[in-house]
Every structure is written in C-alpha cells, then in structure tokens.
Length: 356
Image (cartoon, rainbow, N blue to C red):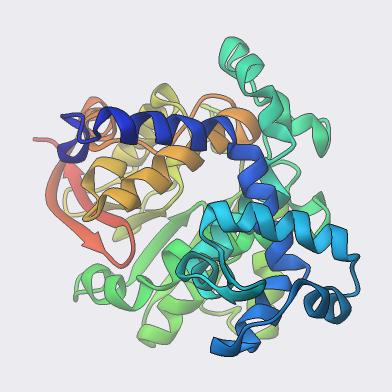
C-alpha cells in the first residue's frame, strides 16, 4: 500500500492524467496498430536518419493518409518524434516494440480482454464474467480454455507463463530443499511446473490435479517428453466441495492458481488442503500480490489486469493484496511459516503448515 497512501500529482499533472484515461481505448489501439502494422519497426530501422510519412506508407503498404493519422496520434503518445517531417522512434515507441513485458501485456489486453471489457459494469453488478460471451457459453474461461481461438490461447498462455517461468529456477530449490520429493500440483495447467520439477532432481514425483481439459494439454506434452513415470494426473473440478484432496504428499503446490477463485472458494480449497496434510506436510503457494511489489508500476499492472477475472475469467476473483489473501490462509486453519517477496518479476512465495 506504500505507493498509494498520498496524492503525488500536482493539479496540472492530475488533469493531464485524467485526459490520458479519457482517451485510453484510442491510445491503446493506436499503439497496437503502429506496432502490428510494422510502422514502428520501419521507423526503428531508419535509425537516427529517420524516415518520411510517404516512405513509411510505401514500406508498410498502407495509404499516406492512414500512416499520417496514426503517426500524429503517436506523437502525442511519445511513440515517435518528428523534425522537418522526418520521423524517428521515441523511447516509449522502443519499449512498445521491444519490451517483452509490454508485448505480453498488450497482446493479453487485445486478444483476451478488449471486447469483453465493454461488459465490466454488468460483470461488477452481477458477479458473473459477462464478457466471456464473446468467446463461448461457459461459466468460467477455464472450462473453455482449450476451445478458445488459437491466437487468444497463445496470448493467454504467454501472459500466464511470463510471470511464472522466470521464477521457476529461483523457486525450485526453495521448494525442493530436502524434505519434499512427492508433490501435488493443484492447477498444474500445461505441466510447466511438473516438467521443471522433474528436471531439477531425479527423485521428484509430481501429481497434477486440474480440470480434464487442462490435463489433456499437460498429458500430451509430458508423454512426448517421456515423463509418464515421473508425473501422474488427477482430473477434478476443484470448485466441487465434494472433491477431496488426497493425502500422502510431502507438499501441495499452487502457482498462480488461487487468484482464480473468490475468497470463500480459496478458503474451501485450502481447508481441504489442510485436511490432506500430515503434521510435517506443507502447502506452498506462489502468487503475485499487488501490495507486495517492489515497484509502483508492478502494482499498477496487477491492479489493472486483475479485472480480467471480473469480466472474463469467473466474475468473482482478482489479483489479491496480501491482507485479504493471508486472511484466507488463516481462515482455512493454516499458518504461514515462511514468506518471501519480490521473487522474479512479481511473485511472493508462502510456505504454510497446519495451525497448531
């Protein structure tokens, strides 16, 4: 919360920010089209010499008019600069074009969220992901994930994996520190954690527990890699409160999973995890908590795309702050024995045991 306790803007900066917000949808689409049409790349390739509107239009096969209106908008966004009718790339344009985080976020907004967000107000009012109807008639996006259009799937998985893949090498030794060999991965998705675990040490066995559609994707990959003897599968709907979580594991692992559920649902899942643990077992959770970010922009990104859960995913979850999330853990009968913030881009690792 440290970033948001006082107003740091002057009145002039505040009205300027208000105008950026008012033009937000226009700004986003202009930046995306400048990127996807190749205009920013052509300008980048021109280097410090720059390039004219007409030359750009010829290279990207668009009209001079079309390129002109995009570039003029891009000037106000700081994407491009102009001197004597010669365009060069601005710093912001460089990052729109080349920064992996920006690319992942922009693709996720465009391909997964943009049309659905027209229904934000209705989703807030009803507690249902009304925007999901743009893709299909499912209760949650997870039910239909394997049926989404290929480009939507690609952007969804790229976003999901971007914030976890970079931390796996950092987190693996923290999880498998000697006592954990047999682990239950709830919400294992495409099996990336399971695969990383088997590569980390030869005596680790992972059981993935997830929706059948998700498991089919993981199974295919794991079979192709010849890891059938190292990875097992349990198809379930974890939201069904009759679904018991099996015991006999050294630890239960959940990575970027619990943010897919409401507070009541998180407590229900964690209570069942608690029941499945023996006295030495652990529940290990990795989540991006927006108030535990090192930089304000990290919190900003999580706060904004948190609403994806509201509009498209399920209608009742979010990227949580630590106060709300930790209360769910405690309400489930668990206690945190170790907390590590600022892992990789955004993650917090929480190790939990049964509360005595």
